[in-house]
Length: 306
Image 1 (cartoon, rainbow, N blue to C red):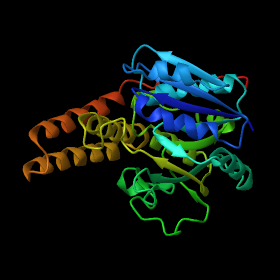
Image 2: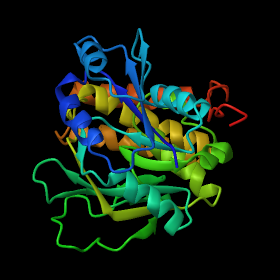
Image 3: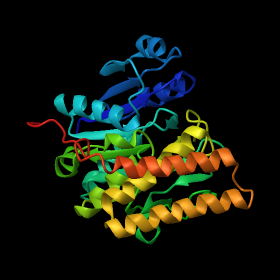
């Protein structure tokens, strides 16, 4: 199995040393690395070019095109080069030498389309970030990380089928993209993984969490955290966009009203500043408008003939 490892960089210099060190130790050697830079303004490009291992393609963009578009760019390049599986992988991570081997082996063992490792916070190292996860239809298909925040006491040591895993690290067979297409680039960043997993679920494609494969994630090291202005905008906007894209119109409208009311209440009771309230209001409207712009960018298809 030839694995195309796709990672998107954006001012990522501070995390790349550990990332490259982890990749260099992999026991599964039939892989190629595709680094897509999204207009970095630090010395990410210079560092990558100095450290590029054999079998690495460095695709540079002059502007920040977003995680979804950057990942698609890497996936297309990997599929054109004959890769039979794609590992969507963050670069703010560290992992052991058998990550690729164990994820690839589990694809055949469980006869599934996708596999994901047990993911931990970088610190403390025994704190679980995601042991797979689930999509919650009663909450507008909000995703939930399985075991998130728990100390690992072996409670997730058995591989199992799950309905969600963050694209921080997921190994995906080529055939999955043939069925559902690539990432929806309108999300830019955040929620594109929810959208992709939802489409896979609707197509009956299976995803397994493989605890023998493990990874440590420097959560929010490059985005400023869940409460940053950047994160608030895109998380709010993209949740509304997802609901208008996939749910019946009346139900999507209900979720839109709920989001606006909840944001207002948080402001009135002092949990949000006026600036954050205004940001959430504007982002929710932006998400609704995004869904009205037509289907042109929805779920683009991978290259044909591979």
